[in-house]
Length: 211
Image (cartoon, rainbow, N blue to C red):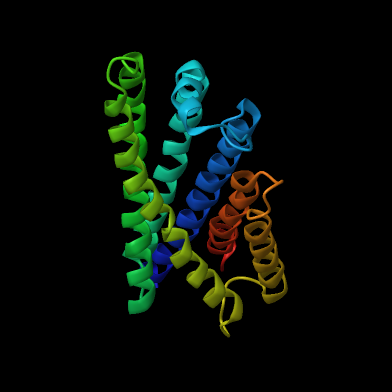
């Protein structure tokens, strides 16, 4: 009995950590939009100069994003630790690896972008090489959310799922709407696409309050 209580408690803690981490990430996305990093169309050649000029703000925003994804990684590790289903263990493990990949990408960004931009006029290829490395880590890592959607669907539609079916369907509708709207040229796709982060928010909350 003591062991089961311990596992239940750590699962609740994991849900709380995932919820907090996701809220941090959503907040940083709002500030990215506010300073014009996302939601603004600009030619690719202007991107390095925007990053350089906005580095104090971007450094803080991306620093907080690292914290948000670190919280998510801790939550996935806890959920993996106490998972009793083989398929869920696999999904949590993939999510953990994907999130670690994102954290490494942000580490490279925060540690190397600004020095590379200081010498951009002399060595532009250095910054572009670093940005390519960051993208190669961040993009596959972000695809980990697709595996979380699988968990979301199972927790919504399975008999003993943790997510209320009615609210789960509403959440799915919101995510699908955000994805569809992100392809509309006149709308800020990156900002609307951020609605996909409601998936870890809903999953985290479900594990947080589960009994």
